[in-house]
Image (cartoon, rainbow, N blue to C red; front, side, top):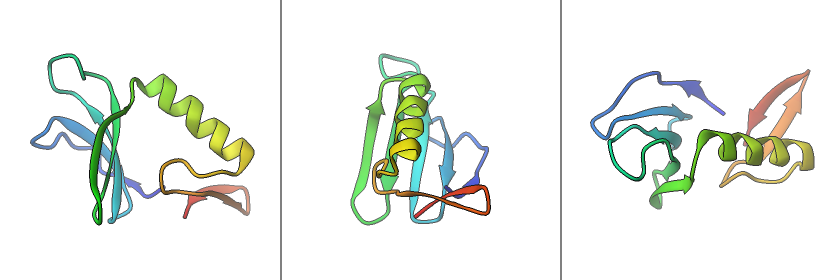
Length: 85
């Protein structure tokens, strides 16, 4: 999944990224507050793809359990460690 950037950027988001793609939490005041979005260097962003971290984490757990993509990332477990391709 990449490393935790752990910062609030100009858009008010904390990001998890691998250098090419990012999942972020919208921290701007307003109706999108708390939504999880995605950004891909090649195609741009999708703000508010998941309405909350809870929905995002549920879909992430389902993706891992069913070994299916979450966005453009496919989960993989090697030596009991989860990574995303």
